[in-house]
Image (cartoon, rainbow, N blue to C red; front, side, top):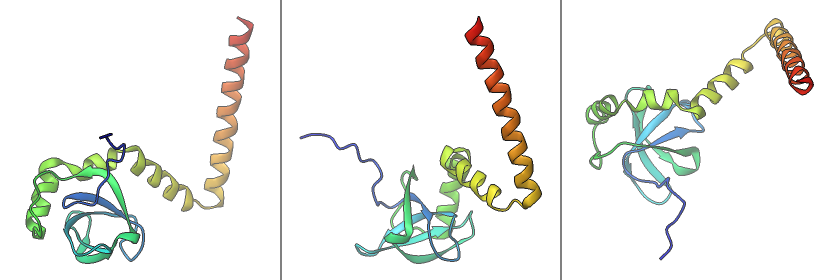
Length: 137
């Protein structure tokens, strides 16, 4: 039997990113699988209330809590999240940093976008000069 490359499974303890709803953009944990369309999620450290959520509005992350019992209450989930420092792992991940950068860029005003444009021009100029110098040498 060949081993699958797929590593993100819907399982109790899997950390998920919410794509839709009032808590969109936050992370939560699957605490119980209801059926093939929905799961019970809970995010006590990210202000996501315990609720039923459809899988089509969830994105599975590579993070998962180990040894989380089925239908664990908010207190147990919170202790496990803090014990394994899962929220910090998420915040330090490239995925979360990219989302934060995109969100920051989205909230810029006209002057902010102008400042970014100038910074990009400066960076391009420095890189161009360094490449030219390296090619001469």
